[in-house]
Length: 243
Image (cartoon, rainbow, N blue to C red; front, side, top):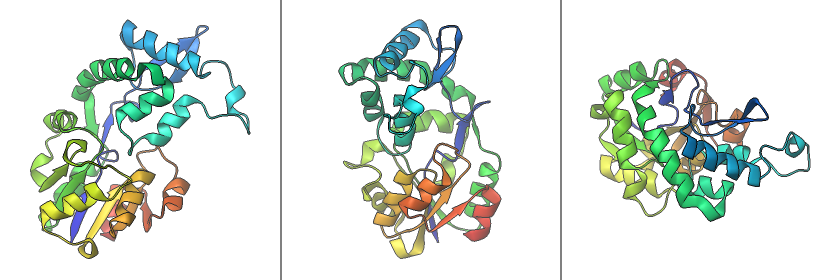
């Protein structure tokens, strides 16, 4: 059996699950996006974008019938869209600037990455069973290499399909099918595991048995179910048991 995975449920930033840029408004802890202790340039640009979109104007956008806050819109895109699309939600006129400062701030934070509890053991166990393993991710090759430099799991994977390798991206099935091609397998003999609805939709569109995992905590279980997940699991141990 072939197992193709995403990276969102494998790695996390220390302490918070994912790195963030914190914004303060009126002396209180504000809404977050990206990575903590941001340098002034990043903090200024993101705060301006959030103000422009009403994300720092109190709770009015949390009421039913009101537009979602940009931070919620961005969270909904995590795992499928590229970084430019996420920044476009914040401020379409400053996408390149927002992407630049996000990358400048986020790149050093990869030194603090750690695997979710049980994931390294899960990957090692599957490899020991002779499973073919591959990765499909919306991240670029350089970003994935930064993660592997900290958490050395690359040798377990026979294929790593990054955003650089395909013209279309999740939820399109192209990257999943590319991984199957590289590993010499067929959809009927594979499973795809991810923590976002984009993972689920890509796997289903590729004709692969698709498993949603809940411990990434970006997308609720119900959203994974609505996307068509064949199964949802809540721990690496549970995932190992069903594969």
